[in-house]
Image: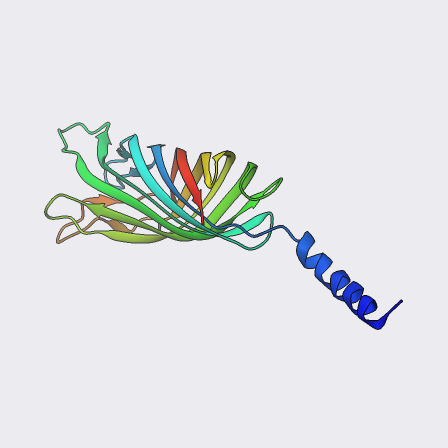
Length: 203
């Protein structure tokens, strides 16, 4: 056997593990969703302020690590309101947008781009009241989700996902205050859920 043939076989052997390694794919996904849950308790009255349910939008950037895992940058936003429940006197809703900004990852049980997957992240929740006299708040939060990804055609896929959020809130601290306190929180977490459907494009 010639030296040239031996050299070619050696190169092929070295290249085999790299060729067998699944390609790490990147995706960007635009979602439409429905968000629900989330309440705060007024310390003075023990009545509740509940976040309104409704439509939300989200976008995710997933950067491939290997054939089953990705880094993920995730943003979800809903413009809704805090609604008073149980108050004896009439109290007006507080127009409020809630945005989640998280960095984390996804893990596919089969391979990136198809089948069931898990997702999670850490980051911030931004509470942005739209009415005059209220101030915005930003708190630490985390999320966990599960979903299914279905390839459609070419670089496009459908993603169906459910995600839960937990925002850490200091018990008994003033919240959304500007001059005078509007809500004083009792509790440690603000929890919400979301169901999402999105179109993902590979790049």
